[in-house]
Amino acid sequence: QNLDQLSVKFVARIPVGRLRLGFSDKTILDALSWMQTGDKSLKPLLEKAYQVLPDVGLLAREIKENGVEKACQGIVPVVGIPVLPMLSQRIKSPSEMVEKMGEVDVEPKLDGLRILIHFVRGKFVKAFTRNLNETSHMFPELAKIDKFVNCSSAIFDCEAVGLDEKTKMMANFQTTMTRRRKHDIGETSKKVSIDFFIFDIISKDGKNLMDKNYLERRKVLEETVKKGGPFKLVFHEITKSPERINKLYKKRISEGYEGIMVKKVDSGYVPGRTGWRWVKMKQGEEAQGKLADTIDVVVMGYTQGRGKRASFGVGQFLVGVKDGDKIKTTSKIGTGLTDEEFREIERRLKNLRTKDKPKEYEVRKNYTPDFWVIPSLIVEIAADEITKSPTHTAGLALRFPRLINFRDDKDPSEATTLRELEGLFDLQK
DNA sequence: GGTGTCTGCCCC
DNA sequence: ATTCTGC
DNA sequence: GCAGAATGGGCAGACACC
Image (cartoon, rainbow, N blue to C red; front, side, top):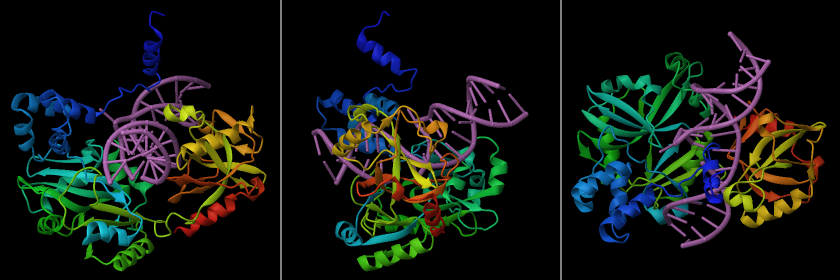
């Protein structure tokens, strides 16, 4: 009662978990530059330091004590302190890859957890995720790394993938995720053991390798990791032929991999997603995002949206497939629409609103939308994969779903059926 | 002690 | 993760 | 081209409820 309107807005966001400060670590980097020079001129230097010491508090202390130049130049990766991982972008075609990167190294893309391993012989071995969270406890397998590497210390970059106990095949992502836990690790690790597929090394025996090119790092890697344990090198092939890239891509897809990673041979380890150094190619890319198994689903309801989407009146919408007389949910769609398409779908859906859930809808409680709509609008949806779902009433869900198009030419009776979706699911294996 | 629901500087 | 948009 | 901000499924955990 004692707060003014603006204060109420921000105080109310705390209990509902929606408070944002409105600035990120990047803004702090700007501020540190301003502190010294009154402009942003030192930002590139600060960003480079931040990549290997991504803690603005520690960074600020270093700078206060030693000045930006001295502090930043002395910063190299330290085993035990997480480094921001190098990330990949997408490129539409292999020819564009070669155009932008020249000679490249092609690796399979594995569907697991990105892990950076920090190892100091006799002292510790730690694991950090992409977001710099320490997850060492998840991987008791790491304890024996000292037997499988030739070094006194190192930082490795790898993908951790589960191994199915019975089939000895690589587990799917959902199974690998069961290892992301803090209780009963011992028990779970017997059911799902982990292999670490290593593809990079950024520090060895106290030497910083981030500025070495990829092939040099790869060479060091081959001299460092011994065969036989759960630590395996990701296989690779060097090429500058777009045709070869395409062929490898198709081969890896047929072998069950998620796709390929294509890496510029002549490139250091540059954290973040900037530049054309690492590129990914996943299923559907070769068809240029076209009809790589899209489905036509019924829009069942929608939510009001937050932030920018609140102005459109739609944040996300619930979609389902036909199963006899019933309509069962298979996904929510929250991306793939332009601003104009959001306005368009709001105009349509508001006319279809109905107070109560239509009788033919089967929806788990947690998917209850802000507004129900009667079955009328059909939309075309793409996804990377169909998965078994514990929560969607169709029993199947979509991984990375996005809108492709409105299907005004179709009515609900022509929507994809559950049977058809199950057919597509079986086809994946 | 079970079940259901919600959350995560979560993982993808 | 995917996608779109303002810069 | 980049950074930021919308949003997805689904796992283990935490907690509320019965």
